[in-house]
Image (cartoon, rainbow, N blue to C red; front, side):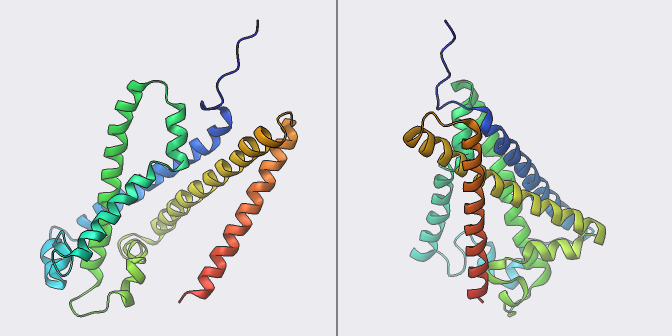
Length: 239
C-alpha cells in the first residue's frame, strides 16, 4: 500500500518561496536597524550625549509616559502599542512557521530567538528615531517640518547625513529589498490560499496543477494591481 498523504495543514513545498523571501527580509531588517545606530554613535567621536540632548529639546522624550507625564491618553497609547504585538502572532508568516515546526521542543527554542531578535531590532529602530531628534531638531523647532509626519523621514535623514554616497545606495537597496520581500511573500501566501483553500477544496477538488498555478498567478496580479491602485490614490489624496 502506498503511504498515506501528509496532512494538509503541515508545511508544504509551495510555502518554501515566501519562507525564504521573508527570512531574507528579516535579515535585511536586522542589518539596517542594528548597523545605523552604531555608525551614528561613532560619528560623534565620544561626544554623544543623547539623553542630555533630548532632555533639553523636550523633557517628555526621555520620560516613559511621554509629554504630559502619566495620564489616561498616554497610558492608552502604551497599551495600544503593546496590543499590536499580540496581533502579529496571527500574521501569515508566523502562522506558516507554526505549522511547519518539527516538534514542541523547537517552539521553546524558537520563542527565545524570536524574542531576542524582536527586542534588538525594535530597540535599534527606536534608537534611530531618538538619534534623529538629537541630531536634527532643536527646542522650539517644529519637528514635522524637519522629520516629516510622525518622524517618517528619520531613517532617510540619518542615512543621508551619516553614510558616504556609495553606501547610501546600498543602504536604500537593503530597505527596498526588505519591503519587497515582505510584500511578495504576502501576495504569494494570499494567492495560494485562494487557489488551494477556496477554489480547489471547495469548488474543484480535481483541478489540474497547471490550472491551479494559473489561477494563483492571476490572483496575485489582481491583488497587486488593487494594492498599487489604493496606494497611488491614497498618496494623491493625502497631503
